[in-house]
Amino acid sequence: MALNKFNTIIEDCSACVGIMGLGYVGLPLAIEFSKKFDVIGYDVNQSAIDQLMSGKSYIQDVPDSIVASKLNKSFYPTTNHEKLAKCDFIIICVPTPLTLENEPNLAYVKSACETIVKTLRKGQFIILESTTYPGTTEDVVLPILESTGLKVIDDFCLAYSPERIDPGNANYTVSNTAKVVGGITEECTEIASKLYGSIIEQIVPVQDARTAEAVKIVENIFRNVNIALVNELALIFERMDIDTWEVIDAAATKPYGFMPFYPGPGIGGHCIPLDPFYMSYKAKKFGLIPRFIETSGEINNFMRIHTINLVEKGLKQVDKKIYGSTVAVMGLAYKKDIADTRESPAKKIIEELVNLGAKVRVYDPYTSEIKTNAGVFISENTIEDTLNEVDCAIFVTDHSKFRVMNLQEIVDVMKHPVVIDCKNLFSNTDKLVYFGIGKACSFVDNK
Image 1 (tube, rainbow, N blue to C red):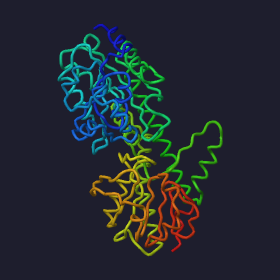
Image 2 (image 1 turned 135 degrees about the vertical axis):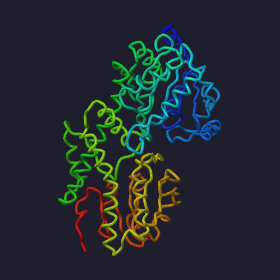
Image 3 (image 1 turned 90 degrees about the vertical axis):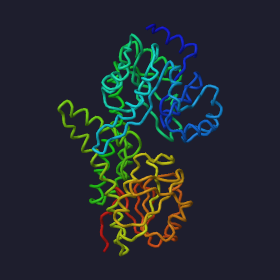
Image 4 (image 1 turned 180 degrees about the horizontal axis):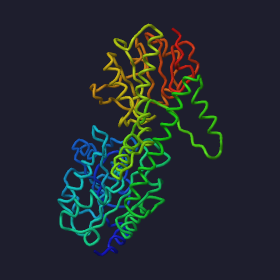
């Protein structure tokens, strides 16, 4: 295969780029590529494609205006997989969730590859971006593509480049976030690097696809482990009557050798709660038990139960139990000032409250609903409507809107002024029953 062809069509911007999966990763990437190339945006979700075809975005970081400006000029959304045949590059940006047994679920990746196989031709370049364990590109993707009879390098190219999308982060976007690239061969790495380098400021080529896959896993395991560490410290410091938040902020004044992480009700998003289990699964295939990684996951998962324990503790102060109480869950997104509820701690907290017999109300200023195993919960219209006559309010997410609330106004509308603060939102809490994750006196029983 004439590899120089790829260099030429990248340089003269005549390449056609296909993006498979137009979610939080795929849509921003598709729009960025559409500033230089023709882009075929493929997704199986017809309603999502219909919305894009009307010039509307469903991703907070992608304005309607930019979708409308590129639509049918350089960006072509579709559910027709046959249109992928005209693409020179096809980038896979589909989810990689877990099974019920916390093992990797590569069904979406395999399905995407099987869709590509239907129209795969000589001279195409396939890139996987979905987060996964080291070896997926070579051991899972490559065999499916070669089932056509076409051979990698001779007929098509293959690489891996982990997505780096931080929803809601206006400072670091697709174009200015360094991009790691690893190909099946050195030539594949060079070509993929050149493609991404046409729209991204800094490219970091690595030895091969396995190395690139490992980079993504390490990034998120690092965060998972450090969050677990401060969560465990928060549990300890609560019992020692020490404010974890003050400790961390003070430690962060050290100009070297320390990076601040903060406790909370659990972790969410599309990467941190899942990636450690991908690495754990692969490590066991090599006969190793990743105890440190698995313990971190257990600690972070426990924080949701700890939140419920604080609710129980708080309600006890007003002679109430969870059963029969009305509890408001404030914040449904997994982090502040975004609408993304994927793997949000709020889901498990809501489910546990329902299981324990509570009546649950929810509110989030950015998203209208959250789907849980206990049903779909619709956000109330206002904070006041949500808190009116409730027995307890749990602040799960540190939305900016919550930080500027008047705490006295909260107390005035609640039936019982019991507040569980998971993100260090409030101070001056003398006039209410207050328990906070990692806060001093969280386990002092006044009864």
